[in-house]
Image (cartoon, one colour):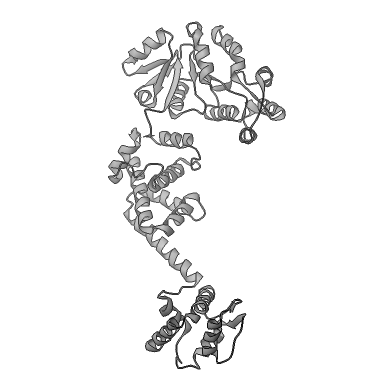
Length: 427
């Protein structure tokens, strides 16, 4: 029968009038998994109608219409008796015919095999547990894996294994500060395998988020924060925070270079790398004040010699370095006071910090009466309004309601005199 099917396919190839007919038959077979459905060529040519007539033994005219099962039955009445339509189509198109169900089953089988290979290679029980959570259907990590595995299963398997290797290396060195590139090189032999833009790095971030019990980071700030809280230093030089007046301590006492900045009341910018070498950070007054805006910070620092407490600038969304600094202050029980713009971003930053330091941080000049002073004519953007609606911090509820009702931005620059008075007057 194989010879018959080959002869039939060769006959069809010799007659161009069959090509569109067989193409439609292939679509129907893949869709139904058997000869089923109706083939219709509304604009059939004379050659196509003649080709159909040679099989069915009756004349056709546009639209050319017949059932797939009728085509296979008609073949049995020709010299190609005994051939199956599936075999003829596979030989004609030189392709294996799979139904939609068979394609899905084959795809599922390959995906399961890939996961099994990675599980077998993972050594630690904690990492196997995280891998199990990552590969639960429906999650963002699972969807990423499925999509990439369909594109390139071999590459996806390698990247998933690299992500697991990174997690195992990190778990073995819990408590140590690790640079991302060094961790990646030690765990996978490739310093860039776990970069956040690489598939292995994205999967590594999914595993870190699962380990921390948080959502996958949706922004660069949240990503860097997740790295930091997992013991990874991603960018320890460009992550910065600026301050004046803080006592920065090492194992030998106050850092001598930073002490000079403090004694001279000068602005001092700290990188995450420099902060990682500190053992503690203190405020002589037990308080520290924070502002969002760099220009406001530098303007206030013109009177730094008169400040009773240190001043810190978050420069918008707090960097990992800023969070590290605030964590060290919080460890000492330092009272924190934050002031920002009256818009979605400023209030959402304040809410984030209140949530991180619930017993220590208080909004500073962020009440409705302060908004009345600094309100501008600039309307809130749609993005700002969306952030504002997500601000659920009780201490900021009244301010958020006032801003939302008015729909105008309130700028911190218009509160400089009030902020300056608080920093100079004895608390």
